[in-house]
Image (cartoon, rainbow, N blue to C red; front, top):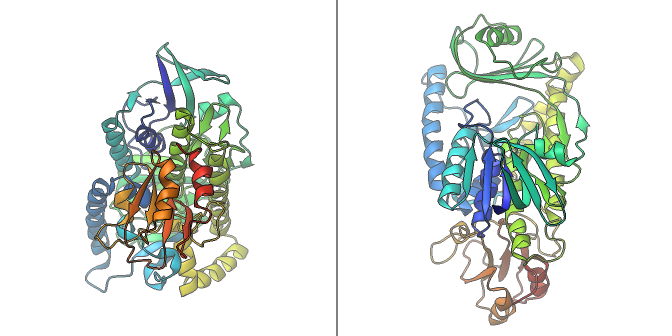
Length: 505
């Protein structure tokens, strides 16, 4: 049976890609080697750009429900630690374990304008994201096969023959590798994967502890590394600079966690039960391209790095949202020349930034006397209002821009969640996965220019109350702005429509 796309990997990235493709009526098969979802502790939060992606696809209510449950757990944990004193300001995140509070952030900075309801989404576990996306993919008509693994494939100019470990072969137009950092798809296709070798061993767990009552919450620098207790009950993490783990795959025992936590914190804690645990390191590598013919990479298959700063899940979701509509247009034969190649052009620099961001944090976490002195300087800078705002902008993803031609300042950045006079917001109009042209000045010429692309681009005539100076905005299916103007003209609009959506009907 031939499929349009086979996706290897049923984690959040593969499932998000499946959702994006199904919105465009692409026939999708997701194969996942695990027969049940992996409950190992992983990412515990998302940034603003990821929350916006969920919001634009109508997933915010399901995500919000989990976030509220987590907020209650965090509140109880902090209350158990701090008594009835004044509540500390919530952190916006950390850099190398240096916590930065939100009360120093200038949220009036233009980069945060019109962030909309997605701004309230922060703490949500990767497993919850996977469950929400899995349900949505099935609802949209994707097929998901669990307990099945890709064991080989042959890729040609016209398609890919994919072999599975159940003995079956599937013909597909395209194969997408979203199968993690040890990606079989990446290795078998021969993608180059340069980078830097690991230097640390990290351990993260959800466990039952005794003797941890006196430990401060948050990131703490200890003897030869760092440790974290919280913000969820039983969550613990250590980082030690003694090289990578000899074996990342053997089960982690309570004794191993206990010994690591004692070495770093100096506290006499006991680990009485382990619910979930994992090892990690700071191996940092990135594929030189995300596409080789009919084979594509997304998420950890395309880039690996340490988890510091929580960028991995966000980076992978961004890959999926960028790739989905471009691959769909290519499959349907409507893509302009070179559209699919812009996937690497746009996403590779952001992946490269994340690798550098995490490398810098590992360097600043070391415990030698020179690094300690440097860390104090960086701490002083981050605790200024400008420093806190800088960190918040970097972690949230609002500074990410794609190299899209255009003179307006908004071109190439994620679209603000514009508020319209009828009470709706932009995110509510992007749930079908189509591009959107905003006619904000009742401009007949603008609507006429866009009429040839009506199959791919919805035109909305509205009054924008949050950005009244704008007269027209073209927003791609991934939520990024391809064209904008304030003078009421349509200069450059036809070129932009042609660039992203091909020939007019």
